[in-house]
Length: 174
Image (tube, rainbow, N blue to C red):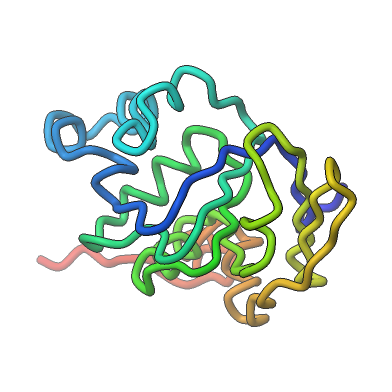
């Protein structure tokens, strides 16, 4: 599979999953260790999720995924936990952009969540803007990620995107 195609086992969530459910504040503000945060990813929405998720798995959700505060660690901890992509009917605007900025593939597809169950296997083709539920043999068009955002995503996030193009990410002032 190419770098723009992801395949994995589904974890299903409903509407309005908040950033506090993704990385509860009681862990986020206790440490800056992303590995520790990943041990609690999506625990607020499903207490068993962190124990059962495996690298390459895919999150499928309803509307407004990532709502709440604009915490950048929310998509970062999902990525660090090994989730290959998040597919939802819609995303909170800031979550969506933060996900692209940290290199987490996020895909808008209104139909897929309605025909997908936990444990199904799905495939996402970012370049073609297609999602497939391989378990149920159905395919849907997804909102295609604009080329400039796709470049950031494929580079591994905004910081890597800037580095690959020879730009400074930040400067010491003083």
